[in-house]
Length: 65
Image (cartoon, rainbow, N blue to C red; front, side, top):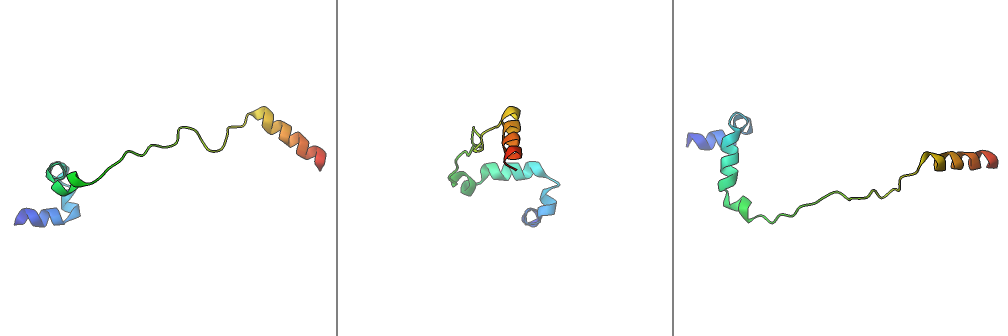
């Protein structure tokens, strides 16, 4: 019964993280959860622009002004 009180207190759990990992490994509810791996996109949505292109845009904007 005393272990139940310790596990109900999140600050007490930080003192014994191995017990938390062991309880997670034994948990049937956690094992039944559906999971999937989400990865970030390989390519950025905004294309990379080189310095020459930025300079050319600045020249065009200066000519228009």
